[in-house]
Image (cartoon, rainbow, N blue to C red):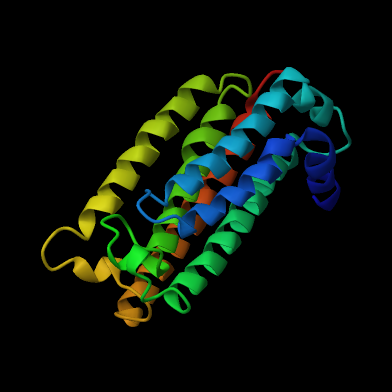
Length: 217
């Protein structure tokens, strides 16, 4: 698996997959739906899958002395590396906003979602949905990716819209907490996001491996 990951990083991956990790910094932008950073990170991963398809990377990989299931797992794990790298950058920015910039007027007057552990939890949910909807959907044919990606776009912006709207509902203001306010609730929501990411990615991993094993290339 280590060699497959190296192959993914050095040969199969689009450079955009690595560049778009920087969109995690969008958590620093006031007056902007910060969760869109997850979409751009996933867009970079999508570019890698597109490049791999056009270069017949899956056929090449299937000819290597490894199982087809491991080939699919390598693709999923590569996506996880990019996603978690983006999340790490988001977490750093969130820590800055929760400490140094906690009382900055530009953020206090922001009507959109604040960068806090709840936002990180939703980002993990979105990454998990990408793995299940797009990656597992792609491996159903190992060729067609337009339909699963369009489906992911619809789902992700629906989730972003709901997440942005929740803190405007009376009694749910704590979801948009600043600094370390409502920290136990915030950490609980982040933990829920971690569980969702692990569960959704686990399903994607299992589904992708099983589908690719049965695919006639």
